[in-house]
Structures are given as structure tokens and as C-alpha cells.
Length: 331
Image (cartoon, rainbow, N blue to C red; front, side, top):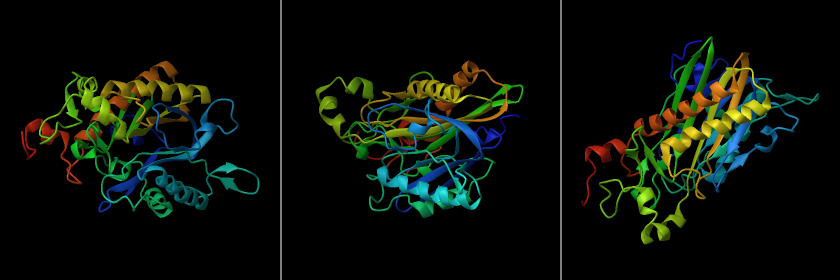
């Protein structure tokens, strides 16, 4: 199976759907695996907002998930999972409890209440719409779905952040084995390219025309005082068609976090919720070391794709605008 879309949907059995409110600058993204997929999770950073993560860990009964929700709206956005469950229940998809089927829908949220409208958040209806829009083809990236209100570089607050979004990537590992990633990037830190150059992140006050290097600024008195107000997180899904145990799925999620740390500086802070889910659809033999290594590589590329596909919204420029000097304001 070739990685034809450079997206999570290159993994057979995986579908992705977005729904959002562009006026309110918030939304949600759903990853569907209707036949079930062995699932794991790795959560890092000090400010997570999640549901159904404990059951994904080893030593718990449930082995498979049927969807993963990524949503904006802070903790309010977890409501969208109810719509995902309703959609799957209508499709007779879920964990068999004899009297019916209960869809297993873990999820995570990001904080976007300070962009757009704080009183409009993803809800059950939006979650249902994301499911109805899901497909196995190309995945829209940038300011869509859970990435609608995403921003990066929060050292000086959202006013001097850069617009971000949601991004995807995949890798063909040969022999029919595929791994992919889908990441909504709402990081406290800067997003950097392979050479360490900032491509999206915190902009230097008062004009916001240039990036400030957060790693350098954190050492200053200003950085130590301002950083406490940040509200951020990076959330995403890595998936493969390998046959994995639950322990191996969790290991894949853990290894994928390396890609997050390579693309974002700093990562996993107390202001980030950084949560990656892993799904294994179980169609092909695969080694977890190989798949995990490329899950990290796909995550890294997906993060950079998220900021490169973003467009200016909410009064915030894109990283490309900052790099090109196209941001208006004081020097």
C-alpha cells in the first residue's frame, strides 16, 4: 500500500473528517477506524485535556478504539465526543457489551478560547458532522477542524503568536507497511525546520514583525515573568496497518513524541498538554522499532506541514509572512 496522500488516510481502514466554525475560530477533527484498531497513548506536558486515555494503557481490558477525537474549545470541546459516539452507534460500531455496542472514543483538546469567540466551542453536533465528513482520501490541512484556532509561540501571549493549524504526513515502509500522522499544532514553543530555523513561533514585541527565539528569551527576566500565562498543547494521532499488541501501540505513541520534540522548542512544558494517540489496524506484520521510528518522522513532518498550510486568521500572521517580512507594524 503506497503512501499516496502523504496523510494518515494512507493507512488502510483509517478515515479523517473535519468540522469547524470559521467565524468562531474553533473546530474538531475525527479519526475513524470503524473496524476497530489496537490503541495506545502517550501524554506529556503539564496541561492535558483528555478522555478515555486510561483504558488505552496496558493492563486494561479494552484493546481497540473505534475513533479518536481532536478538538478545540479547551475542556468544553470534549463534548464533541458524544456526537462521535452517536454516529458510530448508528453504524453499529463499538465494543460489544451484549445489550448493545459502546463506541470507544478517546480524545484530547487544545486551548483556542483566546482566538475567535470563547463562547462557541465544539459540541456533539460538530463531532457528528466531522464523522459524516470523514473519508479515506486526501486530508485537508492548515486552518481546518481542530486546527482552526491553533496558534504557536505563546511566550508573549496570543497577540504575538503565529497562526498554525493541523498537518498530516505518512511514510511507506515497504512490504505493504504504512505509518502516518495527523497533528493539531497549538504549541507554546516555536516550530523549527530541520536546520533549527524558526518557521513559526513567538513574535518580538512591540511590532511583532520578527520571531524571538523562545529558548533564548526564556533565560531572560521577561521570559520568566510572562511564560506563566501560556495556554497551549499539541494533540495528534499516529496510525499504522501493522499488527501490534496494546503494549506495542503504546510504544509507537511514545516514540512518536520524539518527532514532536524535534519540531517544537521547547516541547512538553507545563503549559502544553502534548498528547499523541496510536492506532494499529493489524493488517501487516511490522516491527515496532521501525514503525515507531517512522511515526516520529511522520509526526515531525506533520507539525511543519501544519504551520506551512496555515493562513492568516484572527489578526495573526502565518510564519511564512513573518519570514518574508510581510507583517505590518513597528520594527
